[in-house]
Length: 339
Image 1 (cartoon, one colour):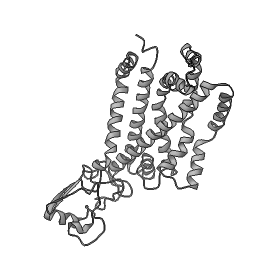
Image 2 (tube, helix red, strand yellow):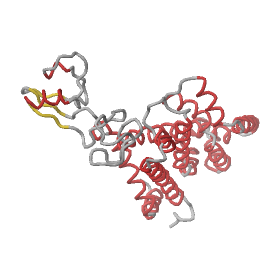
Image 3 (cartoon, rainbow, N blue to C red):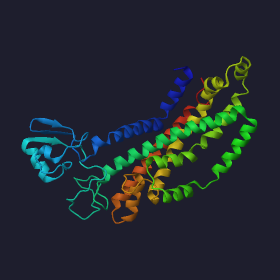
Image 4 (cartoon, rainbow, N blue to C red):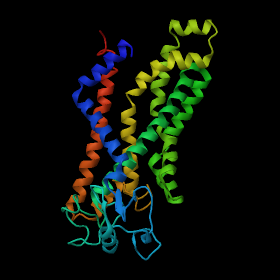
């Protein structure tokens, strides 16, 4: 790592709020990737009649444990529990509920308040709120990261082409971007979602059409500035291929400015997905998401734990990304990284 990057890294760590936010965000993302091992209605390990089984990885029929049906075993069924415990044992995750698991043994009508069984209560269908929150975090963060990375690649490529070649290429490109950016994105998403049943990848593709534009202006300006420098002109005079000049000599400088926008694009991606889910034009019905949790809170005002969970979880996640973005911006600020 060169001295300049070392200074930037030290500057990033000096921003304690941003550094701690990054650590928390990474921890949350890695934890939600392991959601199946944290919140699941399938046991992590079953020992029955001297044999070990891993239902979290493979589905086993009820007859494997002495039952009568060939269908997948329901390990929350008292009869199946009794059959397994008669000849062995089973270990459940810390939260014995998946995102779609319904608790049929609630002490009060759904939505039920937080209890020892359901730490954050249940929604109006009897599903564990904490389990759905964990799976909703995983979907939102994964969606935001994939969309941000894809949008960054497209935005950097378009900005690099416009900034390097300039002239007619830049003029046509700017006019097209102005027209494209003037389209009402949310209305288009709502119209398209009402025509086609949305899913994760369909929403990702549609939102990618509009998410790449914020980086174009930054990268374009950096390429305009860099192409007039002496080392670029020298490379062109020596006959260095255009692709190599862009990739090795100009893109690294442009990416420095572009990196400061990445956390904010990620923030906007998650917020947009949450908004679409809240309006009912996002992921398929029943999917665990932060927007669906907001809908539950709106429809059940008499259950304040739903609204509090939705508000604090979304506010916490978006605040982390804002703090990370501010720390990255300060780390790449030339006025703060000088010797």
